[in-house]
Image 1 (cartoon, protein in one colour):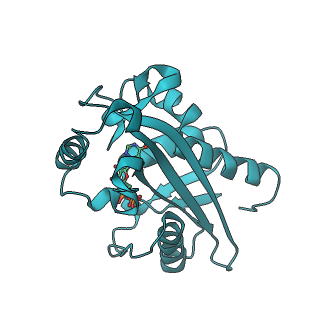
Image 2 (cartoon, rainbow, N blue to C red):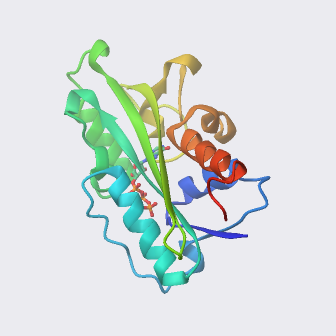
Length: 196
Ligand code: ITT
């Protein structure tokens, strides 16, 4: 069966494809549908934005869609960058530099943060389902590691004593916000709560 991942983010897509690797699901992405215009993510929450993306893509293609809206929530910054994680600054480098700057004076004990991932599944017949995954960590004082994407080099995960950019994709998927959300999706498919 076909499933469109309603994302243009290659980092997300690789993680999701790795998690659903043996499921028999044929995963397409927005790269396969260049005619779909850019989707405006104007929701107030991760979940609202995930549904905006999944509904738009399911409607435009007539194929069931799964969307991931995610971001980094930093306690010392009152939850920023949050739903604006992708728009915090123009490039990944600038976003990460800006976050490090804003956190410069924050003591170690107050550097707590979490990644949040809301996932929304929408079928063209109107069936909808959603889930959320989170993972707790700390914001580093400098960029550490070269794997992963986005804010991964700044997100220190204490149980692994490493940032998400210092571990490989499969290890990240075992504990990450996205790994948890996609596992919930796979479980729901397995238990026939979602019929693809
Ligand atoms: P799509 O909307 O096309 O899926 P996007 O990159 O715009 O792609 P979001 O709107 O959900 O996605 O923004 C997510 C932001 O949070 C983006 O800047 C990511 O780099 C960051 N982010 C989300 N999950 C992450 C992860 O696992 N590791 C590092 N950064 C992450």
